[in-house]
Length: 369
Image (cartoon, rainbow, N blue to C red):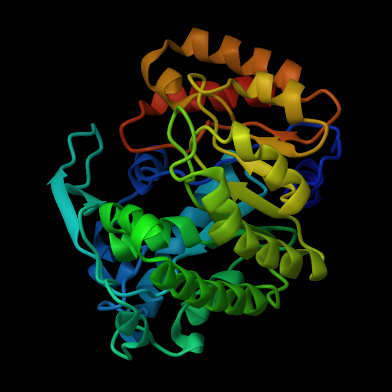
């Protein structure tokens, strides 16, 4: 398998690599297991979760080898499927937040799905931001040890695309609860100012450490900013609290010679200029047809920022293999013009997507390239 990472790097930086590479934010393990015919269950434990929390903490030493074994299976999958990188991201180790659980009804379900409780969070006062039980030292805010072990299993020519699971917007909502966060926008500016000051310190510290890993070829952050009809909070609030942190992170990555990808769901039309001109992201990922098809995004902003993916997830889940292949070819014909494009889903490959539909998209992509 050709592991030429330069192909995806060129696409992310707006160049034409001579072919259209594959890009996926991630593929759910349940899909990987069905395609590979393997079972991750023996390697699955609370300490093997991709996303950790403060109460779980960093991966225990005893579970480190199980985690590495799990990532070796993921690496084998991404190599064999034709991806030129391994997506790896961990969240900062923040205080535990309350979650709502419900049964996972997907064909390849994992038992339960979890959602953050939007009504309340652990951060309620300025004093909570100074609680030593909530905030470990900066060098313990990210699992650098596991990240380092994953870099060592990469084959020659392959690199990691990743970094942060969740960004300052998402984690602020998790820590405070969406309702309390919205109230604070109007009633407690002091709390928000201090919260984002702390988040900025944490994210900048992690970015600086990650930028020292040679195996990290492209940095990215996943931070959902919008609904279908607009941004979750006002563009003015995003410019005040979120975008200055983005700018710092992108600057650190660029200084280290690495491009930066923003993965963000929602309707971001009102802030695209900010993301391109002020934050200076190299590439944007996550698109929905009901907001704006990726082909239209290409016409509007594609000469100024690279675009990744765009085959609508709902479309991939519901349509026939023939329809998926036809749409994939059409999207590639439009978006590959001038470079700066990689093909994949509009968001990710979740465990409720029919595997045959995912493979139909990949077959059409390979045929086109």
